[in-house]
Image (cartoon, rainbow over all chains, first blue to last red):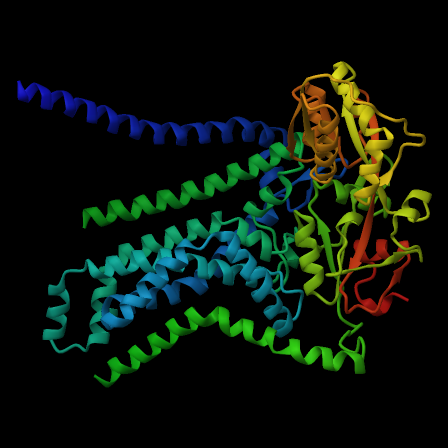
Length: 292
Length: 308
């Protein structure tokens, strides 16, 4: 009797888990369908080459021009800048937290890093607009709204992702590696940078890719510091304003109509392709890691 | 071991800079504040370097304010049957009035445009062609940068919707328009008395019109307590589309209707909204010719000294 009862409750829980899994899968499929059904016709109408390889974004002109090349390049630059700023700092911080940090400092530093992850992006945006933009304007010229200001904000925003994943992957390297290296007479620094870090490589790459994902997809913070000017490719500079794929959607979505609105959804499709590429890279790393 | 300590110190310094990066950068901006009031009376506007590039601030391409401003200032230029928005390359584009104000407030060399009702002391609204941006000047037509606030319906509306539209065009309704610093567009408004009707009126559209609409609904409810409103502020184009497809009774628009839209809708002018051209408070400029504003926004003039 008892075993059948247990069986029933097991079956029930199984169904609950199954349903939960189903809901998240349905959500992904629904979003994909929405994007593709609304975005693909627009891309078809504009022409895929015209859409992706044209730098002229003039949705209110007649005839209108819907080219997002400038924003694809913009997203790439801003993300690259964020990686250039965030990865070295984040990686060093992870090494410090995992291997060199005294317990008392760790008790403060670790929650501080976690707090960084919890700050809403709009607050980052305010901080950027009120502090970083004027700082750049006064010290580097230009009007401050620029690729650099966006990169700095995003560089800070991706820190927690990079730090926490890198740190745990550094911690998961077997102690025997370290002991062997130290036993052979290597210093602690040599051990950390030549043995532990290479062994934690896949975790570090994972953290970087997740960081890229966050930087590419971030919207609210970037819209406040990037300036959102659509720049022709030859005029894109570090200290000039820029528009990214995400900020293009958010600045114009509220008022857009017709093909203009659909072209913004199509911009979302391109963004989605970016994220799919990143996720594929991520799973490639994971499968390669599993083989080793 | 010495190496290890060194590395620890470097890492600790790095962490500290990270943690205190906010505080460190805020300090310099705090310091000049007590000094400025002392300096300013002696040499007013001495900080203003007219050789510097103008920071042109605009709204996003889908904004009603932008559509109105760019059309009035001839930044949008029609050549044959093509229309081209000649906004200068590198102009900042923001999706809200508050962001435009913040950008101009912070940047001494900035210029922007916002709804007249949103002007505050954070920025300076300048004269256009030596005409001050005041309600009287917009009403008389002397101040040229203005746009209509429209209510649109499909023409098949219920008596209730008709009654509400009558209210907005009545003495009581237009008083609210005037109180909110918008300009009344109704020539001889009639008096309104409550109708005692009941039901729901669904309104959607311009975020610029929405605050005024809310006030109108409040007053209408005092006279007709059984009427409920559902309102969505989602932009002029959305409101116009919602009125066309019948999903909402009334659409709000802060831009003039396009021809294909006008053909399907009844148009009521609720009010006229002036657009103010704003500059930083430290900018000595008080007056710009309309051609100069156009020249700035199209990139023909890029520094303040070029403007006489």
